[in-house]
Image (cartoon, rainbow, N blue to C red; front, side, top):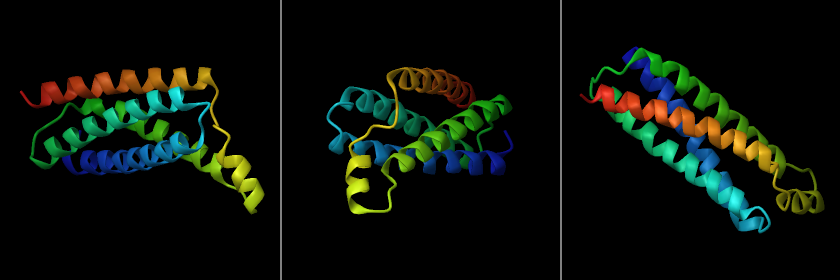
Length: 136
């Protein structure tokens, strides 16, 4: 992964990941019925954040990481972007009553959560291996 391009990609994914984590915290406080799903997804997102911070640190310190990490970083970016948009859409409304109703509705079904979590787990594993190899 080219150093400057890699740092920029990781920073972009990290920023979206942090925004998603913040939205999940807000949903957790507002939606009691989906707390288990939110909690599991929040844990996946925050562990991805830790991995991305480590990759960012390695790239800034001139370490060379495997170019094949570009694919998982892109997949994580796309996944975080999608989550971010869905979380924003679930909270968007033009009037006060609609906003209150929307804030109580969790925008994901259980099977969607499982699919998202599997994708995050797979990409986190690949990125973690890249960190291990890059730090040798």
